[in-house]
Image (cartoon, rainbow, N blue to C red):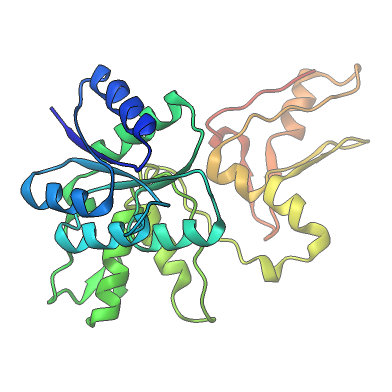
Length: 272
């Protein structure tokens, strides 16, 4: 039975989460402040910690850092009634599994909890060895690179949106590829796009595609569709024969001038 620690200074929230999670089959401990939570973590083994951010004394973000020092493998979900982009960024950089704003839906937090516990695998909890010289195609053997490797391992299995920033040539695409390779959608396509090379007026068309209807039907499959898979449909003039439709839709032209067979799409639809 997975064991969860709930840390919140509000008695009503602690009791609500305790009753909810016990009904889901979890063993639940509660703490009203960070100091008590730290004592519990040092004396027990927890599969997950759920902590409020704004609490008297030691705040939730400081507690998160302390938890990771004690046991970096414990997933931590942060909850707050005072959401801010700054706190969300700090929480995720400090190793939080997710960041939830109060009030939240019951189904939402249950799904996140199940995901946090299920993804606490060696790929998530493991610490990169100091001797590691490469990780998912990224070469580096220093303390800062090992921190990046560990961060990638922690965030890759989660559903969190990730912003990677840095100067040109620092390896942002390599990090993105590593995150994709370790994610739950690793079996899907990874499509890198250099937005600066696409004119602003054409960016939407390149990403999401377009269909032109006239004397000739032209279908352009956007890069997003190539990565995710879409259904294609076209409104054609009544006199167009199905055989002609097949010929018109047989090839898709992309920005590089190459052609791809429509049969390569996983899901397709022709509407007359």
